[in-house]
Picture 1 (tube, rainbow, N blue to C red):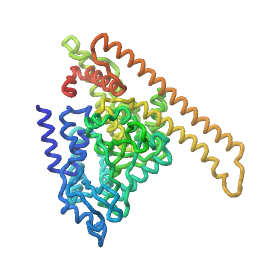
Picture 2 (picture 1 turned 120 degrees about the vertical axis):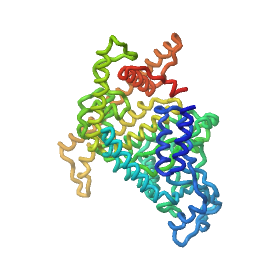
Picture 3 (picture 1 turned 180 degrees about the vertical axis):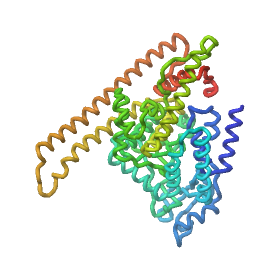
Picture 4 (picture 1 turned 90 degrees about the horizontal axis):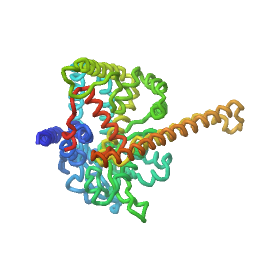
Length: 510
């Protein structure tokens, strides 16, 4: 009852204030593993059912982007009510006046948002200053980048460009399977401006409604395989990453490319927040994953130091949301005879605080891409958990990291020879050819060792799964089915050891 009442009050606050408050509510809703279920249940309506305004209020917004044209000149059968509404805009269905057979989704910026966004960002910056001052936790380093990205979401022409770029990436860089199971709606530029975005209308079921997906017979495993593969492809291969993959931005429909069996196709919406990875960052991030999988701590430390982070262990823990490894041991429910253990546990907590603050102070030199890539991965992780964690997310991410690193290493090796392919027909030198061959071999070796490490990790999880199933049958204790669950359980146990008391997980799973 307490959680439900608090969640309803928070929902009301977000609806009344709109703007960034709705985006804040969306962020809370997606963190299903961190908050009690009532918060996700109540706040999930903010994904696509936030308060909307009347058509009469958005008509001037549409018409000022197309001088000399009225709403009726552009559209027919414009829906009188919004079919979806979120923090910045609302969506209506219509048909193009130029092609009445084409059903479109018209995304229109809310009239008050440009005025409100300035005050919301001012409040956000003030809160960040207050947190940094009151708790000595340096977070201001991230404010400028976050503010810049949020302002970019107000430019719908930029969003249209992001959408088409994501589609080109799929067409030119993705494998045949991924191209078939992911779809990005077409943009109609003749009806698009900075405040209006018109795309083709796609019928589908939102990920916000998992019960409806189950009734329609969709496999959670297939859905999550497609989702994790898509965003792993963007992070490690394409380099253009969707920054807000929450459930409201994902639709599931019958794959029109498959007329033979029931197969889901993932439709990706809302391309307003994207991050362009530099080639250097993409290579370093893929190498960081490879180093983590094969246990190369020296390489992890080298990459972390190149990003200005001296404490690679704490940095890795912060990025992966795992507890740091500290010396000592502390059991829950410490009694009076264990004051030495209790004191050591307190010292460990202070060490975690010190190392965290030090890592955040060093974060001013972090690549700006890392903040939004980590956000993407964390939201996808929450989506996976909301569907019962049907896939090994880390395994899929690792596969695309291996593929992306292989492509980059081989491309770098081949690029050294491209200057010899001009009209004069000058042949490359022997040293150039040897360097090229060595680079290709290095790329293939990196790929093979990376995939081998992934196979070993997968085999280990399979063995764990068999053991956990047997243990569950013998003891009656429910088994943890996936790697994310194992990590969460390890974090819970580590927190109990460090804090000195047991955590009542029923508060979060009731």
